[in-house]
Amino acid sequence: MVHLSNVSKEVEVDDNLVKAVKKVHLQLANDEDAFTTSVYGSRFAAQDLPRHEMPECEMPKEVAYRMIKDELSLDGNPMLNLASFVTTYMEEEAEKLMAESFSKNFIDYEEYPQSADIQNRCVSMIGRLFHAPQDQEANAGAIGTSCVGSSEAIMLAVLAMKKRWKNQRQAEGKPFDRPNIVMSSAVQVCWEKATRYFEVEEKLVYCTEERYVIDPEETVNLVDENTIGICAILGTTYTGEYEDVKAVNDLLNEKGLKTPIHVDAASGGFVAPFVVPDLEWDFRLNNVVSINVSGHKYGLVYPGVGWVVWRSAEYLPKELVFNINYLGADQASFTLNFSKGASQVIGQYYQLIRLGKHGYRAIMSNLTRTADYLSDSLEALGFVIMSKKSGEGLPLVAFCLPPLDEDNEEERSYDEFALAHQLRVRGWVVPAYTMAPHTKNLKMLRVVVREDFSRNRCDGLISDIKLCQQLLQQMDTESIRKQQEFIHKHHTASGKATHNPEQYRVRRSLPRSLPPPPPLPPDGSAPAPANAAPKRRGLGYCRRDVRVLTGYPPTQNEKHSIQGKTGKTHAVC
Image (cartoon, helix red, strand yellow):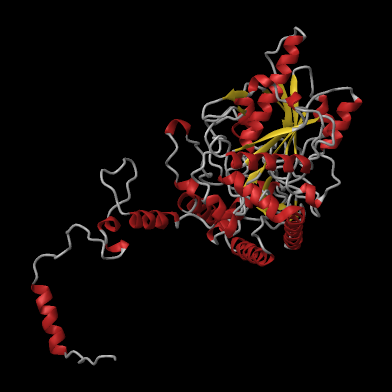
């Protein structure tokens, strides 16, 4: 039954207010928490979370959970992050399996033999997917291992190629102090790390304004007696295009060269076999000796798993493999780390048997259709599409603003970086990049189509791109510059970052101001300033377009990387 209550009279209200005013001190609770209130009624809610030093006392688990969960709510929405290839969706059953394996140390084969066997099953399935030779003789077939990701897998592959080359040179009595590797200038940064950490010279095949992958003939021409191998990318980071591995292989055969090819299939290894199964890029080619693939990209597993497979044990020198009996069982180990959780490997096995070839084919087909739809829509909006369609590359869309017509006097006051920043305000993370060197500072945007990027969400992105363009078109150059600088400094995490040590911090900033355009001559024609980039046909910009926002200058204190030397942006994977 609902109880009745009198309505307070004005006199009573005033009397209560007078009594409250007469109190000369605050009566704030200062007692020890009894935790009968909510998390936000505890003393921890009125304190800063520890940031630099471990606290002296404990806090209740409910409070710790809620405080950290609230902190993480300030992260972006992974589903709107279109910069990354990394998986952001798995089924609840997969998540449960992985959570149940958090406590398992994968390296302990004696204690967790089934987890180790599950890795072996995954290696076998992935090796067969890549047409690995299935030699019936003992210890003669393909071998492989799981890794933390493709970066570790590439490090291991480079180590194997270098050691094998060094052994051959020593056996021939030749010098082995100047190894080199041939690769594209558009490689992901892990390749630069591998060459620098393991002291291997980079021989770069540069992209051009019209070509964003290696040229097979130029690639093979760079090979010499010190070349430990060639890197070919199945799905470049920038445009998603597949490099022509077969053409490189055929040219090596024509010239009688036995230079090993490593295929970086980090992104394309779980796409091409299902979308373009007849494309020859894997172990069907005789010079392909090793392949890496990321399970946490189109392998559809949460971050933390990659794979590397060698054609046979011949291409993995024994002196790189350590046989250990550390935890009670003999085991052969070739990794850069030791202990790691079993969860990601188990997640990969779940996806492989849950989806099967038919399931992967259905998902990759849908992603390809969505990418083609987005590509057609952006082309209709006037953008220039740089990526391939219909399965000729990864399911992503790389695009840039169209060049301004020489005869059109209209100026565009924004560039790709400004559009990327404006989309960030709408919640989307659509990265803008400066392409690889020798492309005349070509700028581009890239949208990665992942499993959870549905057609409906794609329509939302297209609508927001149109909206952002309309807004930018109404702003002048100086207003866009100020807004872009504000967004970069206050809205993006990188703009607010202070965690990097000063001696390693990248000094990068937006231009403080744009130079005024030169005065027009009497005849009304627009002179080209001495430092202006030449006009380009097709992909690119005319002089008026070049003089507006140019993104970010090369780093001032990083001279050892392609990015530091040329201003190329390391693309997100």
